[in-house]
Image 1 (cartoon, rainbow, N blue to C red):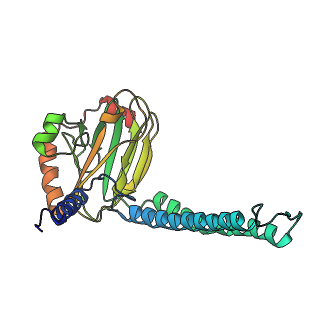
Image 2 (spheres, rainbow, N blue to C red; image 1 turned 90 degrees about the vertical axis):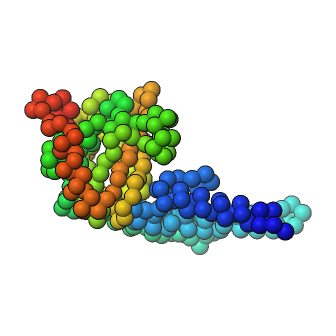
Length: 275
């Protein structure tokens, strides 16, 4: 039996494709669970999600067993004379106390996670994000005070540059690895939402309001997200591309970016919208 006919070749190819896709930080067909975490916040979200899955599975199995017992023991053929029991104190206490215990088990890590997300550490880099119809504007107010627009690539540009369709952009966000990135989010027209799944970030961009969140990338690479709020006809053409690099690469990029992108004018409308 040949290597090809045995199906082993197809399996190896599929495994290689999945590994390559995971390395690119992208979801893939038939993927189960969340995308691999790339920040401490997302690692905690994954852990909490796993806890919820265990609880849901345990409850589902328990209920299925109870239904099976009821079907077998209390059908008309096995139990022709039905019970006339109207009250069972132990059972009623149990079905009140057990759900309370389950909710406490869920609530404690849930509140810890919410507090961890809201308690922002001292920022190393500040990134200002402005949602517009339909693209993103980024500002680095503490690292050279420059801004630029980030627009989606066409299908032809995606193919030419090896970018995933509807996720590649012309000007990417660049941040250093292992540093706290404070993200200040607002909107210039309607409500948008800046979401970066592998960093555990999803923050609404609301006109006239500043929302803050943060992330700290644990590894280098390119990470993708999209606008996650229905914002208009081209909502699905607002991709987010974040490139996480080393400190040296980030410093070199800053030098280039300051020359490439013009300084923010005092009367710039996007700056006024973010204030």
